[in-house]
Amino acid sequence: MLELRSQGRDVPDEILSRISPGHSDNINSFGVINVDVEAGLATLGTAGWRPPRAAQLHELGLMP
Image (cartoon, rainbow, N blue to C red):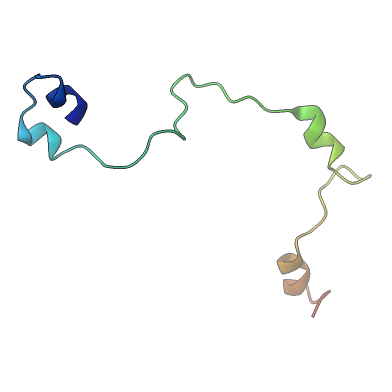
């Protein structure tokens, strides 16, 4: 909106006060998520599951 003001357009302060200053780079407006399934499957163990995280092993008492 500030860009619109810099171009000479009238943008009311009430509208600007309701706009979040957050970034929108991580928002996918097309609704499509590209996933490399083959690469994901290649990282799995032989049983088809990813290895447990250290925190999970600690919770199970399998790691100090």
